[in-house]
Length: 577
Image 1 (cartoon, rainbow, N blue to C red):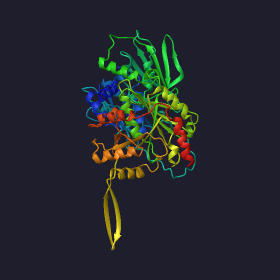
Image 2 (spheres, helix red, strand yellow):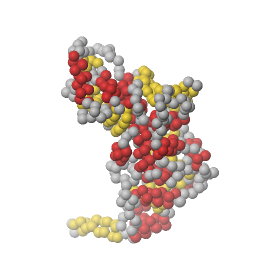
Image 3 (cartoon, rainbow, N blue to C red):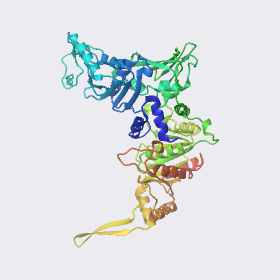
Image 4 (cartoon, helix red, strand yellow):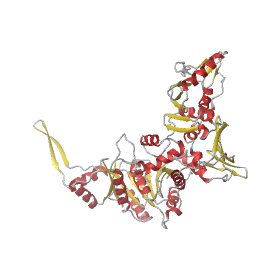
């Protein structure tokens, strides 16, 4: 199955979007590292937390009566299966009573549109959501009826767009006396991201267990809210399912929540699992089954089980007796070549390998922590692509790499030095060291002189050897390639894939003669563009080119632990000078 078909079906498992809608929104994402985009601002998260609170106990043919969800970074669309469910959100709308006291969510505004009600939240309307009803629903009528009911009681509606908002407090003015807070803080303003992530993946729950129902409740927790998911599964099914923790811990398709070590308890009546330091509790009980359970289609059931099976790497799954291979990518100017690492890791993962891009940094806040990694892309096969973070100053990089070797086939190490000294960014723990640099070769030498009061410019053609030497002196001026046993080069090329011409081929041969062979080439994304890999559907002929180049690059690698001691010796000799 093609990767685009796979990720579309995975997203539809959580949103129940139409096939066309899911394809359009996935094509608009910069990459597929997060199939369901997160809310990009606090007002959007708060609005979705309020909606989950309002609809949390609703029941219907679909979870909470929501038949379809269309999540975007700056807005959310909910399609409800009954008009009565649209009426529930009216309790959020603000109004002023006869005593001039205000009720509801004060900065919430509502307007009727063609098929639903559009909600905006915040001083600048940064939070947006559209609640659509079923066919035949009259959103303008629902909103007008609520307005009439409010006005008949002598109250004043405050949800119109023309309603003035509260003035911005003057932070430069010193208060004459301390004022006590008269109204409690809104708990939906504290850590609302959890509720937003759950609402955007609402259909995850019936995808895990056919015939199950789900409701959401909340309770105060440290100024914010802790949420409880109450699952009711058919009586003939077991209460405990490992797929619940696996799906919630996913960082690409799921919300990426961590399981609590002491938060799992199962007995004959219920199964309780807690996540995110107790802020989410999943309580599973047996419920009544009214009629035959709806079974998911064959394709969807197969895809969902494949998604769950590729969740975590394991040493036994690699099928290799030797440890994994560590490759360090080096940028000549000290930056971490993350784009090249993603290209190679994604290509090797699509070819069935388990890959890890490990960023080694120096962060005192991670003192004593071991390296951690999470999945970076879906593959739909036996391969896997992960990213991780390790600390080579306050942590134990050697132990982290050994643990990674036991779980992955290829580990791509990106080490960021803390000074401008180039050799401090090199690691002797890697098995191969590859420099990633620009692939543009100069063909001429330019010279400007002054003669008889005039500027004279002269151009002299380069030979391939002269061009290779000039490239080494300019591109690798900060890399001691002549003093250390580096494996070779990976060169950037334009997104328009083309073959090397005769001159460039001869320059590549000269680079190999100078001890820096070109192992392969990778397409460079535009400066303002996003880095798309073969697991994000590369455009044009780039996918086949990247797969071919990645396989060619890997054939140049040595064995694991092949030159660790020798490289460390060469590094020490170069440092002594």
